[in-house]
Structures are given as structure tokens and as C-alpha cells.
Image 1 (cartoon, rainbow, N blue to C red):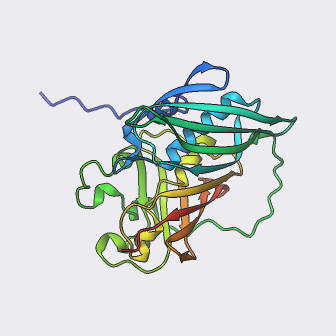
Image 2: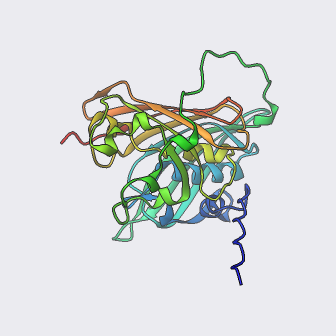
Image 3: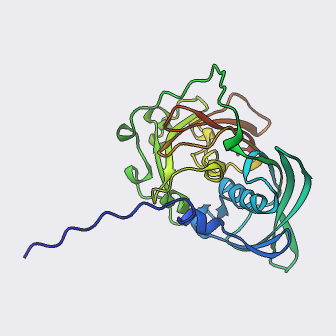
Length: 286
């Protein structure tokens, strides 16, 4: 008797996906939230900065009268670890179209002292209320079709414990930015990829906060190796993304004094620029 065909896995939906479960917080008191940071969003042993930004972004969406992040700036003070954390929020100002708040994430160190890991300041509004008028010279990045790009599953086995986050992402890199993986970095500070969540969940404003910080560092294509920790990251969410995979383009133009900037653009399936970001990161030069 032939074996029964395996039914295709159902696509996750917004609000019911691993990303939503792992960024969900429990409100302990007004403006105070508890969360257990998932080890599934780590690189080596540190929790990914984009995932952390989404966690704080979700807390502020609950604390403020507006639900959508318009601009959010984060300073990463110490490396976050998987495990219990608390987020504290403050409402700075509320208005008819924009509300501003700040939030910090805290964990306890080995001596039991509370340590601030990340602090953000953000303005929120209603993306659906924005006018349709668009005047731009920006153009979507030229990335080969998804089937002609390559993901972590196409390369050698990753170092154990180094890439848990890649198991949760649909990440297909432009071959022209993959020289570093072959031992032949281009020397250009560029990284481009198709991006989505592995379980098929469509993008939304909070997942855009993850998308801008989920690609390999541009430092790899500059011939540098090792961890590239984020010092500061600012994200502008420009509109609600359409369903389907995103295209992410990241560039670096200046590495100096052991620091580099990364400018990211995120484009949706309808060729709209849905998010932009800039971050300052530290690099290891030797």
C-alpha cells in the first residue's frame, strides 16, 4: 500500500507564529512587562538585536495609544542573554497622530544585580492613516530571483550554537554578496537578500524591526570576521508591508576607528520602500 502523502505545513499567520510567541510579553503592572528571551534568536550566544528591538517595540505598542512604530532608536548597552527579562516603559507624550515613549530591557547578571541591556526612544502612529502620496528616487535593489539565491542550508554545516536565528528565517542571499562565504570577499560593504520568516508568517511593522538586523554583517564582505555588535540602531517604518517576501539591501561606506555604519532598505512584494535603518556597529580588526 503506498504511503499517504504528507500534508504541506500550514503557513503561520500574524499573531500566531513563533516570532509572535517569542516576542510576547506579560504585563506585570502598568508599563512593566516580563518576558523570557528565546534562545532561538541568537547568534553565537548573544540575542539578536533586531529580535530585541521587536520585543521592546511590542511593549511600546501596548503602552502607547498608537500601535505602529514610525521611528525607533535603540542603544545596546550590554549583550542580552536568553532567559528572563523585564521591560519598563514610559509614556513621554501623546498626541492625535503621534505618541512618543521610551523603554528599557533589564536582566540580572551572575551576581544577581539588575543590568540594563537596551534602551529605546520611539514615536508611534497609525500607518493606515498615512496619505498615499509617494515622491521618491529610491529604487528596489537588483536581486536575482529567489530560486537563484542561496541560504544557510545551501552551505556547509554551521558551527554548533552559532546560528539558531537562521533556523527561523527564510534568508536567501544575493550570490554577488556571498564572496565571504567562499573565502573571497569582494571588498565592498554590501549585503542583499530575500527575507521572510521560516514558518511563512507575512511581514508586519514589528517584523520589519527584525528584518533590518537579520542579514550577515557587511563587514564579512570587507574581509573581516567575528561578531559585529550593534552600538546604536535607528529604524524608520514607512508603510505597512504587503504579504510576501521582503528584499533587504544593506550597505557600508565608511569603516573607521573600529566602527562602521550599516544603511538598510527593506522593500515589500509591491516594490514599496517599507523600512529604512542606520546602525553603528563595532568591528574586530584583528
